[in-house]
Image 1 (tube, rainbow, N blue to C red):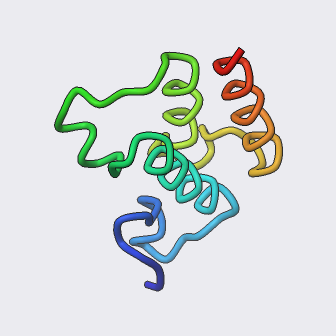
Image 2 (image 1 turned 90 degrees about the horizontal axis):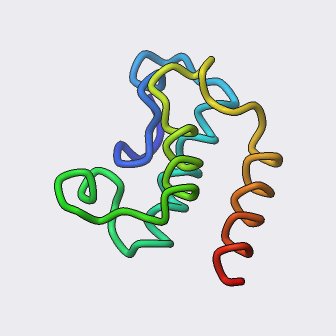
Length: 88
């Protein structure tokens, strides 16, 4: 198993890495960049993002890789769009 445990997708523990594993890690990093805290720490507190952004990130954190959005590129563009809409 290779990677940083804090950003590792559940399937990576079993050495079953897929492109969805990269999306999982990216979503964790995006959450941390936007909140200043890790997703796992935030789950124990009341730290949340605006609902559409929170839901978008959580979709990429689904435990089943087959249930995550398809593709890092489309997911990233949609996140950027949601953030731009939030700024007005």
